[in-house]
Length: 415
Image (cartoon, rainbow, N blue to C red):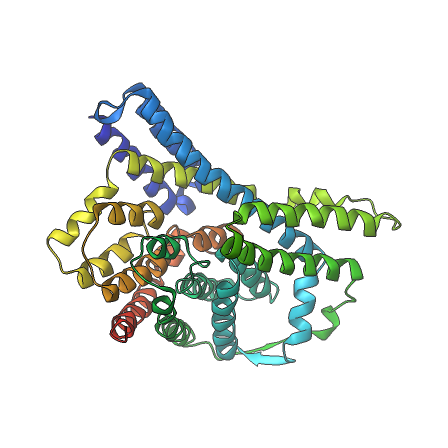
């Protein structure tokens, strides 16, 4: 009975996300409401006869995951908020870009750039920077949706072949299912799938974008310094995580504190009315609250044992087909607990099949806007990008995902 109630509430939460434009109720409010309500019910009437201590343990684990992501996102968004407010990113775009470029060429440029950037940084940072670049171009809302869609898919594709690029990739690697050389085989099919999506989305986009050079302004030394600290923080996060197992959150918060201290020193002689720490207020807290709500909802799904049902697919389908379907399903359910459930079930698969699963869970979340961190960030940054408007791109995304998945199959044959 309790399981049915919680699943019904979760279903209502997802419906309200879909019809946000109709009811005009922010998705952060609805997901936070239903996410917390589900856990309250789980305490009042424990599922499967669990003790309150066990429910508390599961909630603590869920809260830790949320807090880690929340703080990491807050730190990254503060960096980006500062650089955006100073026009730094816009200036770089106008200095690097040619005086004019076709929309189609820009589509391929954005896709490949987002792919590469997510390969050398985390998905959150890659998404924020890529969106900031595209949004500085003042594009038509309908076209901006296409670019944002490509960024989401490219960012998720870029990190799938590196243990530092995607949490599920790291989980599968640590479980000794694949090796680093195996994972590198995913680079080719992943980049091909991005090019395929860029091609599909670029149909009908034949206009030329002209950059107004008068919009550029002098870049202050302070802004360059902050940008360098940001870049150094991103690379340090990856290096320290791989070499010394330093939690990425710790390094990112250290970089943020360094930004505050250095900026305070550089600005103390200037006549400024704003403190550097005030840029935290420019963060879209709707995004952060939506993260809290949606992860509480997913945590509740795990609590009622819903995620375990996904592993039953492998009793009826071959791994090649089951992996493909699970990848698409990961767009509605967080791929981290989904991967954990599959690893715990100890399903027997070959290295090739695990490689295909790695691609599926890493990229499959792109099918829905709520299926990945990149999608959630984009939905809150781009006003025109909603659950429904993104859903219109599903056919294009499915084609690109399928091409990449087939590519992962043939890449696995090289092992």
